[in-house]
Image 1 (cartoon, helix red, strand yellow):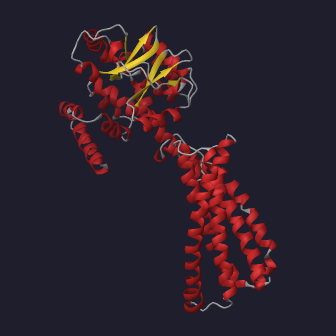
Image 2 (cartoon, one colour; image 1 turned 60 degrees about the vertical axis):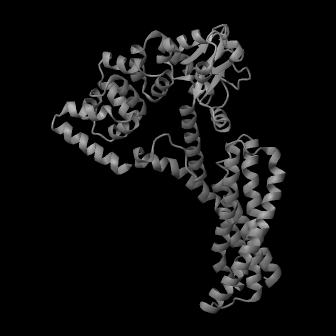
Length: 458
């Protein structure tokens, strides 16, 4: 796919350099807006406006929505008022809101100045909702029908108003703006009696969300029920808009990316990696690196405390990295699973006992498998093949028992911390890999030296 994009970009640039504008326009008219936007985002600033102006009006608006904010701002600054108005008039309200949120204030004033009064009103209404709410990602452009309409009248209404709606497949039945039910275009077209009243064929049990509901919870409903669109209502059950499938997918992608960055000990960034400056990447990473470096002081303190024990059995030192890495990996495995379950609504606080019981059983199996493998590895590789001195049966037993206990502790910590963090109002992803790794590293060392003291008399 990337190679195809590069080849298409080279073809378009060759035609542009040859000033073959008609051929350029014909090629662009056959392309998908997403593919055009991908090419435009990588173009030099002086070439972008000319190519964009070659697009047909509707295709230009669709492409504009898919472009990066930096390229959008560049085009807006170069547009005349009439050109800007043409683009805005073709945008859906939710797309216009997304663009406005990304632009600086002076550009926003130009956009709102060229929008018609009705769109400007709708944009301002959506912008009033909290950033993470259902209201902030909804569109007000949906098909509404009256319950006393006939099927024939409903179809005529869809034909008359559907051109300006983001989706027409699902139609919402309202009376005095209150949501009563829904029907689909399929239901209308397949209805045998054109005089059938909408109230007789509509579905009354409608799943809806409140304008202030968290947008991540809204996105989960799309995954759970396979919706194409979801109605958004206010406190009085009045229909104010809908959230469409594409916007829900954007929310899921955004949340997954944010969770991955937090679990990797980075501050979330709204820009793609390739568009981040070196200093921005540095700012996102250094706070967590500093915090984790300082937190690692605890493991250093433990090593210093047992320095005399290590001096008596130097060979114990060589197994510390293996124990700490295994502990960290075990905790991360569990925490990632729990964080995912929390994010998609599969796991809640009430499930904690069942989770701990399951992780105990998993840890026992993993501990036995890892302990046996470690015993064979130490005996065959470290003792016989490498001939390391000081490896006794007691040392091998110390490492293997520590490994089994550490895996159990790590999985219990990895299963508990994300759930407790969410219960206390913290982001569970933050508690996933970074802090859990530090905690279980300290546990691994404490267990290691306690068992060594008991078995080896240190």
